[in-house]
Image 1 (cartoon, helix red, strand yellow):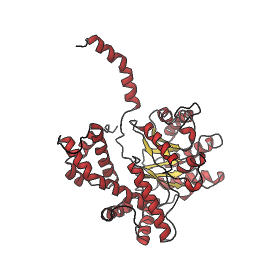
Image 2 (cartoon, one colour):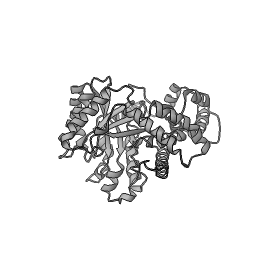
Image 3 (cartoon, helix red, strand yellow):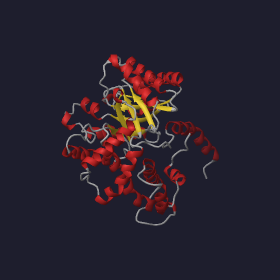
Image 4 (cartoon, helix red, strand yellow):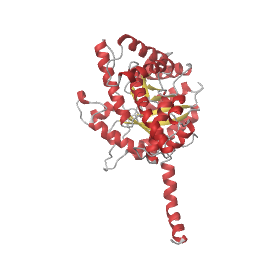
Length: 402
């Protein structure tokens, strides 16, 4: 037998390692992850915005009908009533007011536009579960302008009954930008009484690979001291910075995949999420043009889901149609096999697949994501799996909500 003194010394030496890993990698967040982030320029925020997005999506669906999306017809027919209900009840899960690239107002108009956007949202009822603002980057020419817009927006939003808001920081190029931004967030919290979380947009090569040859994403994430909840891929800025021709800039380009895989590795186990980018091919125009854009968008959404990216950007109301059709189809198609394998795992029933705890976590997580977004109902999940939400959370390894 190994002497107890040897084991005690082993525990002593590794205790700091255990503590550091637990602090840096607390596990999967228990919070619901939205399926998308909808970006709306600050000057385009109007009363009833999210309801209008849902109405516009339904109108596009009624006018054009769905094209062939590469999905089984029976599955599309199954999800379509759910999609319609979602578009009527909660079309936008995450709204980001944009005072950066999507905002086309000039410097003289930005104060007013940002303040008006905040006032409109402060007066709204039924806002999305997640809400925030994207200001300008921390590069020298835009740094103070960006902080001023954050101050104005969050000040206008304060008192609207919300406890938290999200700040999206674009074009991050250095770990020190993240560290230096934390006192700004502290000051904004104290001034406006809102709890703030931070998203970093991965739009520059320097965010992926530093000048010293080391990968940067994980260092940026951990420099956020627990505030960073997501790394968001910026399809077009990142592609352009690598010299990729405009016609070939897409979220499924190999360069995009390389950056996003690095994002996935950086966030794994931290509770932060890696988020896919957008397509700027919008479903507008005649039916042929709308169908072509929907087919592209549905393919990209499905591809992202298959690769473990459960959230992306939507830039136009009609993109909500294929966001939800593709997402709901993915989770509903996943349920039968996931349920059978979870049953085999929980009850230790021998079968054709021998699943380990890590795979059981993935199986439970995909079911939970389907529940969170409305693709699945609690009753049908319980009937299929024999498990309730608490048991699924346990199998998924989700830490208790704070």
